[in-house]
Image (cartoon, rainbow, N blue to C red; front, side):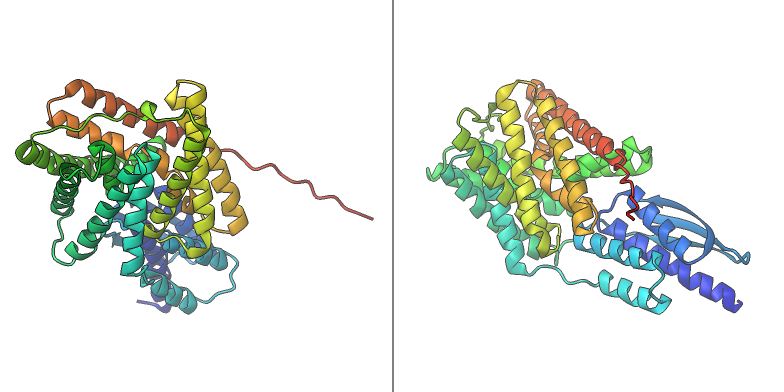
Length: 416
């Protein structure tokens, strides 16, 4: 192999590694393809043809001198890490500016790939605040939200330790759901809580696949059907696992069913109530910023956007009865705000978008549709399934519209 071929091979491996880090950290297909192409052009490749899916990258690159090489890269399971996406994005900008060597690029990618996670303590804090915050945001009392937070804490300990023993996500989710349902029913049995539904839903928020569900719809909208189907099936399997765990506890041990809680049933009559629930949604958003490994300097932005998204939704829902319109307007405004912040903070919009839209995501509705189907309540199940898909498509549409809005061009004036 000639020196040119060796160098081309090394450069293509770097491009593939950048794509692999992005995909395994939760980046969308289009962002991964764009970043790989930016780096390839900066490295003077004549062209780069890459087929990117959520589990692999197939790439062929050709240099101006005619050197051509093909590589295949396997991508592991997605573990959302928005800090890695931000770091790769920043590195790609430096590469396009051509003020960094190949050795430095390779070294930085290795550092990004081995980037440290938040500590065990902070992950437990995130599980607790996420469960408590969103339980109160969706309509629970203060007492029930505290109980949801306690269950979230136990769930966090379980999740952070069980992955060292088990590798099956399905089994981990089923056992986690059983644990949540058992604890929730025990609190109700000893009269320490009053509404089992919101307690369990609040605790479940830490494991619901809301992000993969909406991302599946987004990939469909960009004609990435294989990836969309894979993400949708993963979200469906997670919801089935959750529903099976809760249904087993409810049917075999307590012989009870949860009372349905619909989005339209939220108490939006009081401005104070809406404000407090929105604050807790903001706190819950911060919790997921930790779980999604957002850089600390973005926590305040994520918290404010999470508050705004839920407050907008509650306010609009109180003014008119069309839930989908409330979701669309809230999602649209948050998508615009995320894009503006992305420019200001010089980071990808997904950092703010994935966290701040979390209060609106339909993961809980998707889970409840499966649960009530298993419990033989087909009418309720269909209602929640309809709600979850409509919300997912509405959010995806709002994001896509904002993504395709071109920023206004600022005319440069010449002053004498």
